[in-house]
Image (cartoon, rainbow over all chains, first blue to last red; front, side, top):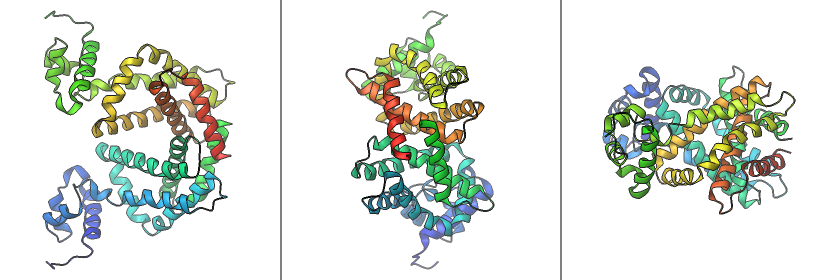
Length: 184
Length: 184
């Protein structure tokens, strides 16, 4: 085994997607993921706290991508337009990873523990987005962030499940329209 | 110990609120909760799957309370009005239990595992509410249900944290107004 593995993290993620997909998350150990990646268990735990985190390790960064997008939106943009800028930054990177994201989705939806972890992730995204919205002076920033993240999740779901992906921004605008109907 | 304990469930819940509040959820065992309630560990596990469920055991029923309220709203009520009917049904029972609910809130916010369980609970509430909204022909019922539950959580939070409780319905209307500003 090579001593220097700059892409170790990525290889572990690929190996985990393969093994969890083949046998189910609960049936696979961290040692097996490491072996599939051609790495040691010790290397695994240098990159990830446990076998769950292989699926979630990049997610804090994604929350910051959205929040930074909201901060970078022009001052005259409405809060909703700023949120769309934030999600646009996210969807650029998502397009290149659609196949991996779909496999990840299938693994998570089959395991209660992973579904709970996914919900905790969205709660953290909501906090990050609420901070960025609060800086723009949005009233009830937490609640508005929840609405934005819920709409983003709906749009993501539609994008990843469709044979011909609906653009994320279009799905989000449809979602916002339905919310508008509801609260009007 | 009396052989027949009709109020065993309630006594276990009271004992858990006391002990978790005094020493923290992680430091208390099911056996200790049972002992505080004057019951056996075996009785504890007849009522609850684990020591977490003592805090969540009644929650499925509450989701149905909201959903049934939405179903019972007059046919001409808007989806938002129907949601307010659903939450009004919930807030009636909440008023009588405010002190217990506040102690429960404090215990949950101090433990990551309980916070994740609470998020899973709200996801289940969202599903139940989405079904009831779908029956009323609401478009994007899942997303709308997420908005409604998020607004309900915000209102609950305001109601339970305030010295002079804001009526839940009033806090919800304020939340819906903020959401309306956001998506308009």
